[in-house]
Amino acid sequence: MLSHYAEFKRLAGDQFWWALSLFFLSYVASVSLSLPIASFLTLTGSAVFGWVALPTIVLAATTGAFLVFILASTVAREFFFSRADVVLDRVRSVFAKSPIRWLLTMRLIPFFPFWLVNILPALLSMKSRDYLFATLIGILPGTAIYVAVGRGLDTILTAGDEPDWNLLQSPEVWLPLVLLGSLTAVSAVLKSRHQ
Image (cartoon, rainbow, N blue to C red):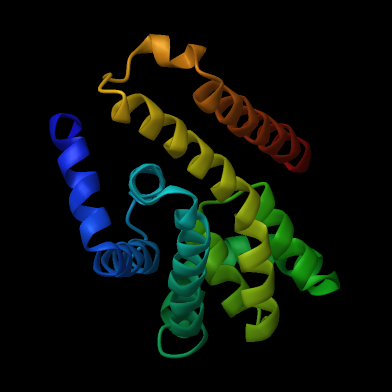
């Protein structure tokens, strides 16, 4: 892909709305199917589409997460319930006190895998409106950091350079990475306190 980056970006620019729509649908599918490619899609999409990728990704991730939430609330409820008993018992009392705050915290500082956080609120009967709100707001900061990293990669790739360790000298790359590392460190500290 690196050798064809400029051509790929030009093609996406020529067919911008089609390309952005395809990217949106791919992102929704990856989240709703819990495929482990969201980080790759975020970096690629932000490099190719620029900052317009931020609202696109947030809406696509929220849509994909909401599809899982609806599925776990309805037709697949018993399937997920039978597999999540232990986790449900651990979070039920905390969740019941403030479902929005719980989900917002899980989205802002991810303790659990994204797919699990998509399912648990459905099994704990969270309101759809609250789920959408907390998901949309909660994923925004982390997504913005990933998009900033993708923009930094675009700067390097557009200049014709291949990513290597020297790219860390560019503030467009290292600053978002520091922010991402800080978010991860805070998550790890909070997780260790809750265990």
